[in-house]
Length: 196
Image (cartoon, rainbow, N blue to C red; front, side, top):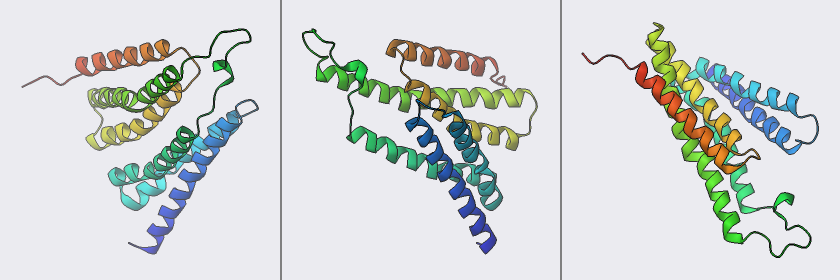
C-alpha cells in the first residue's frame, strides 16, 4: 500500500474517532448546550467515510470507515454496563414501601439492550433492503444503490439505537420499532422485482 494511502487512512481513522468522542461528550453534557457537539461529531464520522473510500475503494472503504467508531462505541457501552448507576427516577419516593425489585431493573436493562442491539439491527436491515429496492426502482446504477445502502445501514442502526436509549416508556419504543419494521417490510415487498 502506498504511503499516501496510509496517510489518508490515518486521517479517516482520526476523523471517525474524534467524531465519536464529540458525540460521547455531547451525551455527557446533555443538560447544557450539546447540539453543536452532536452535529459536529456525527458530521466528522460521516466525512471520515471519504478518506477510506479514496484509499480502499467504495465497498471495503465504507465498511472499514465504521469499524473503528463502532468498536469504540461498544467499548464505551461495555464500560457503562459494568458500572450501573441508579437513575434518580428509579429511587423510591419518601414514604413508599420498597424500591422496584432488582430483577425488574435488570430485566428492563436487558430489554433496552435487546431493542438497541439486535432488534434495531433487524429493523435497519429491512430498511436497507427497502432503500436498495427503492433506488433500483428509480433506475440507479447497481454500485450507487449498494453504496447508499452500505452508508445507510450503520447510520440507521446508530440512530435507532439512540432512539431506543431515550427516556420513554418501553412499550412505546417497542411499538415504534415494530411499526417501522412493518412499514419498511411493506415497502420492500411492494418494490420487489417481478419473478420471471
